[in-house]
Amino acid sequence: MSTPAAAPTVSTPTRGGRSWLSLIPFVLLVAAVAALGGLASSNAQEVYGNLELPFFAPPAWLFGPAWAVFYTLIAVAGWLVYRARGFSFPLYLWAAQLVLNALWTPLFFGAELYWLAFVDIAALWVAVVWCVAVFWKVSRLAAGLMVPYLGWVTFAAALNLGIALLN
Image (tube, rainbow, N blue to C red; front, top):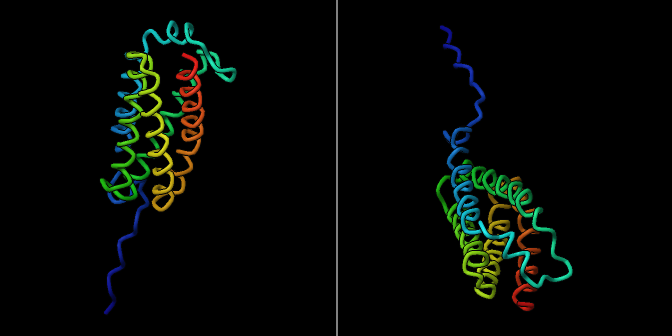
């Protein structure tokens, strides 16, 4: 007597039942942070233009395109971690760095509290470093996607410190 053949397995773009559609909330959440930043920095051109800037300050037009790239990387990194581990510590850490990111723009441009914004961005830097380290154990791709963002946050922290010292 023969045994029935096993059903063929089909490869799907999911892991643990988490499909590509699960990327949408990550994109929307990061877009909400970007929108909050946009609202809080509606006067950014004026504020930035009136500041005493350090010698390494980039032109104001660079920030929008740079953040568009970084926010995309942040969303995909969070989604990759979610696909691998679901709602767990690495994802909560990702959310914490996103909250710190969301706080910076209102502090810096909205309230013009440069020293408090520097404290926030220093905490953000620690959170992003921690994310990279924790993500490395979950998804090396997710960790790698956070590295350019870490570089930008490092630069932005130095710029924030320079502005706080000069103003």
